[in-house]
Image (spheres, rainbow, N blue to C red):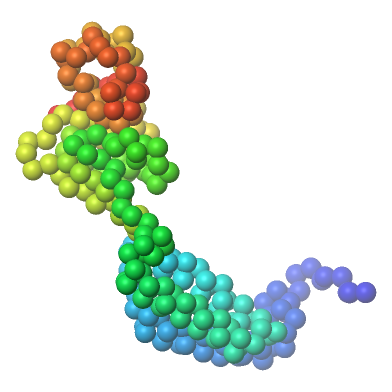
Length: 235
């Protein structure tokens, strides 16, 4: 029968049940695994965190799991952990080579870019995608200095999750306002009846498609996304 746990046993809390000298072994294990993994990653090549592909992100997770236990668990042999790290890195390198030589493999593992905005309106396919919500898309657009969607000619979500924005080269059209953030100041919402009597250029609250004054009487719904709520477009 195991002895009951003694509360506030500082030796157990700080050093655990292992002999005090095991602390030096932990330092040795950590140093060996760190330097070995660093050498493999240097051979593999690396990118900044914001440029990690799906494959490289998986590599980070797998390496973290592989090296962690061997650093401080005495019953995990060091060579076993190094073998796991080696296999993970070699498998990643093999997939990298296959992706470089076979476009279908690259598309299967990394995906393809998605068009998020075209000519100041959110693409219908993107509205149905789960890549980014409108709120997340607007947040990234604001980081590019965008205040309303009419300033954007094209925007793409790259395979690594970053948003590439091409601003319109001509004078920007009015567009759906995204500044200030809607969580702080929600835009004024117009129903179809309100929109029918408005002399302003309106923008669909869902996708940003513009509705000119001469088209206000009909249709009531957005021709792009079939949404029926509008707001005044901002220049």
